[in-house]
Image 1 (tube, helix red, strand yellow):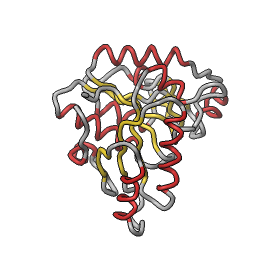
Image 2: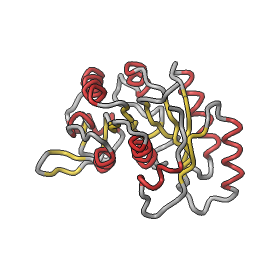
Image 3: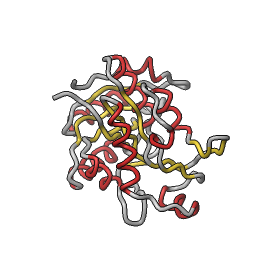
Length: 224
């Protein structure tokens, strides 16, 4: 079955979701597909002449072709670098499912695939009444899990996979991200992850101080 749009989540914050998402966009484009990224909610933004902009969202924009309007790619750009629920409250913003769904539909109309990057880990809420699983179910997207290879990753990956299934969503693949160059027994942990996550591994992104998403896209293999 060909892989089209997906939701990318992580075992935690800081595990390389944006790098995996941008590498995935480059890999899709290398197959001749029109592919765009999306970051529905982003906290931690800087204000410029065009409004609030988030670094991760801008990376997704740069990796997209065609490049969408920023406000479609990132409908909620929240200034403070806090959990989205707190950042939205501080900004006086209400995160609404209908707004994100409409933005996704506009992206999907112009592309063959949309790579939607979540916030933090799977269970990080978007608002007091909205979880990421609600958005994933609404968009009917399969899920790709980015596993940060560091101490504790086995626990975090297994709990994340169970939570995704318990929320009625479908995990179709996982990507290993080498975020800790000092991690001991990295290869053994990678093997243990493969034996315990009930989904295929789409690739392993090596640690790089200044990673190049286009170059790292060659590390990914996925259906389609």
